Image 1 (cartoon, rainbow, N blue to C red):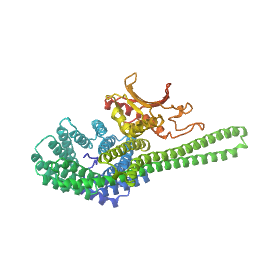
Image 2: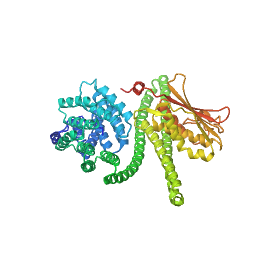
Image 3: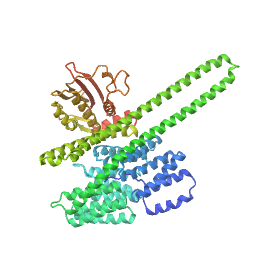
Amino acid sequence: MLILSSSLVGQIKDITALRARIPTLRDSTERVALYARLGMLYTNRSLDSCYYFGARALDLAKRIKDRPGEAEAMNVLAFYYNEKDNPYLAYKYVNESLVAFKRLGNKPKVCELTMNVGVLLSYEGKMDQAMAQYQRAYALSQHLVQDSIKPLVMLNLALAQSFTPGAPDVLPLVDEAEQLAEKQGNERFVVIARLTRNGARFRNGVPADEVIADQHALIATTKELGYEYFTALAYMELANMYLPLHTDSALRYFDRAIGLAEKTGYEGLHFQTMAQAYETLARIQPMPAQANVYGRRLLERSREKSLENQKTGMDFLQLALNEQEVAAAQAKLRLRRMLGVLWGVIGLLAIIFSLLFFGMYRKKRRLARILKDSNDRLAAQNNRLEDNDAFHQQLISIMSHDLRQPLSAMLMLGEGGMVEQMSDEQRQYVFDQISQNARTSLQAMDGLVHWMKLNTIGLAYTPAVVSLKENMRDALRYNGALAAQKGIAVMDFIPESIDLLAQSEMLLFVNRNILGNALRYTPEGGKIVLTAKRDGDGNRVIVCIADSGKGIPEQLLPYVFAKERPETVSAGSGLALIVCHEMITKMNGRIWAINNPEGGACFYYSLPIAGPVSTYLAETNRSTGLS
């Protein structure tokens, strides 16, 4: 469990003193800073209080246009929504806060928020991308004049490395972080250092009974200081320590950790502690009965979480669309004001016209041209907004289709009584196919949602190493039923050794859609050939998906990936290919299509071949202007 930043010394007496100051403050900027500071102090104590003060700080900062205060408030809310298991809003606020602090030139906060992005990525299980963010934050912390955030950066890096097989001993890094935290008088960071050290010692093979006493002492400290969040984490680690010694004690501390996380409203922590307890107990033979209790609760919570994430995803999309509409309305208002000023100037010049006829005539023509250009720009902006609205509606249709396909298969089996008529082997095969299609659909939809986050909230693109062969196999499994039904031979000549630098879910969306189109337009008994090779420089891989269909009509070929097409060219159902084009572009690649002289169509795309991730990220950051 990694820790988001809360860069203040969280002492109960500080909270009491700060709350007592609220009625005496008259300066709005100071009030914003006080609200944000209280929100940070409450992050590991009370989520409700954390949200209350974070939301008040953000509202007041926006009203008085306090940019630093607004960025601080968004940092508080990012922690709240992460612990409430709402990754969409957590990403939104942490990225907006990071962008704001970059604009303000606040290097300590940029370092802190870079680390927080890594924490959010780790919550989603993307540890390679998270580790890259931690290492970048650690590098930034080495150049800070103020080192108040440095201990937490070091501890998060050490904690992540302690779970990495073959990683170096992290205890020296933990010791250095604790010494720095004690020098600063930061009790919260000292607690985190002790928690990290005990866990690292246990995972390094130190006998459990030698670590348990230190863990009990740490729990007493967290209780005394009121850190309920860290108390739950310490209970969970203590249960793991007791497991090889005394199963009943381990079960008791698992229950305490889960109960405390649930009681205090840390939903993300509650789910993760229960999942860790179940995974640990399930490995014991015979499996304790408590593991079944955790399993049932996890299954129920997973279903609720799935429904919440679907609803939150749609709400997030609507939020992004609403923000675009607000921005468009503000642009229209500015244009109307500008037009009003122009008409006022025209009226003023009309009074002078009688005195300076010739000069006024020239000025009038110039103003008319300016007015026409303004109207043309406004009309073009309106057209783009209408196109974007239609485009987003069609994106929602794609997501609905991907969700509907596996659900429809399950409904057909249930309503038609087909399940009862099948043998056990047939039922298992059907259920495996439904599970595979559902899993692949969710992966492809994850790619679509990730691409939408890149475009709506400006989330930084963080590539990872992806096996082209495995990704293409997933796409083939999803389309396998259609290939078998039409008797189409799929010849896969892609080497096992090719790794790409890409985003796995977006690449799956691209491969799945291009393969689906190839199968749709290839006649029965035809064939599809998959190949991949390095380009001339050896830095990129060119992938080809060739079918034996009729090919692409010549009049449509130049517009396969274009949003706008001439009226003489049918629009067809090319939205997915447009999204594929934008996804490949986001991943620093290129996509194109040609017709085969022998018949059929060939779809090509090229992407960077996997190399040292740190070097590539540095080059990407320089090209995008990130610091």
